[in-house]
Image (tube, rainbow, N blue to C red; front, side, top):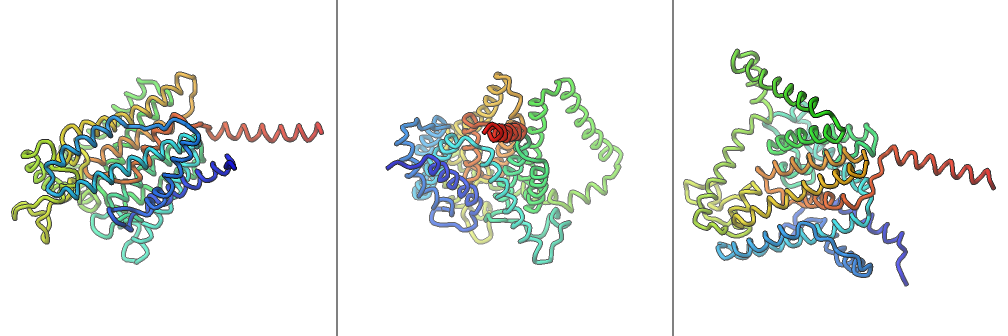
Length: 437
C-alpha cells in the first residue's frame, strides 16, 4: 500500500519546521556535544534515505570535493594528535554534520517552497531573540538602554554562548531581509529591529562586525540587482567614504567631539574590543608556536588538548590551551594548509551558487529574486567574517543556512505580488464557473 504524496509533503514540512525550531536550542548538551535537534535528525535521516531510494531520484551531494579534501587532511593530521580520541570524536561530528547537511539539501530541493522555510526560521528567531532579551531584562537590574554597555549580563537566548547566539541572530536578520519580495514590510522590518536588538544585547564584537560587513555587501548587491546605474553606485560609495574620512579628520585633526567619541567607545560594547582581541591574539600566538613544529596539523580537536607553560597559561585554573576561536586558523593549525584551502574553496562555492542562481534568473529575463540573492550573499559575507573570531562551522544553524543556499537553484520563487495575482485569478475563475452553472 503506497503512501499518499500529500502525506509525504506534510511529513517533510513537519520535519523541516521541527528542524528550524530545534536547531537554536543548544543550551542543553548531550554526549559528544549533541543537541536536541540531533535526536530528530538521527531518527529522520534513515527514513529520508529510504524515501529517496524508493523514488530512485539522484542524491545531490554539495561541497563533495572540499569535504573530501578536509577529511583526508584531517586523517593525515591525526598522526600528530596528542589525543587521538579527541580527533576521532571531532571527525565523527564532522561526518554527521555533513550527512545531515546533504539530507537537508535534498529535502529542501524536493520541497521547493523555500519561502515558508525562511518565514518559519525568522519567526523562530524572533521568539528566541525575545526569550534572550527577557532573560536579561526581567531580573530588573538592566534597562533597555543598558544593553549596549560593555559591562553587565550578555544575552544567551537558547545558546550556551553569547557569540554563538549572535551568529544565529545575524543569519536570521539577513533571512528576514531576504523576504522583501515575499512578505510585508511590517513583518520584515519588525523582525529585523528585534533581531538587531538581540545582537546588541549579546555584546558580541564579532557579531556586530560581521553584521556591519554583511550589511555593506547586502546594500551593494541589492543595488546591483535593482539595476542601479554604476555611476550612481560608485558615487554613493565615494560619498559615504568621504563622510567617514571627514569625520575622522574632524575628530583626530581638530579634536571636534573627541571627548564624546571616547566616552561612546568606552561606554559601549566597543569598549570590550581591545580586551577581547588581546585574549584572541594570545591564544593564536600560542597555537601557532606549536603548529610550526607540526606543519601537517596537530590533529582535529586537539587545540584544547595542548599543555601550556606557566607563561603561556590562558586560564588561572588550567594549563590546557583554548580552542582557536577562528575557523581559518583552527583548520590550519589542527588539519594543515590543505584543509584550509579546501575550507576557502567551500566558502567560495557557496558564494558562487548564489551568484549563479541570480545570473540564471537574469539571463531568463526574470527581475525578481534580487532581495534573496542580496540577503544570501550578505549573510555568507557576515558568516565568513565572523569565522575570524569564532569557529562557527561547528554550529548547526550555519549548515542549515548552507543547505538553504545549495537548494536555491531548485526552488520555485513566487513573489508576493505574483501570488496575489494568482489568488485573484483563482477567485475570478470560481465566480465564472459558478455563474456558468
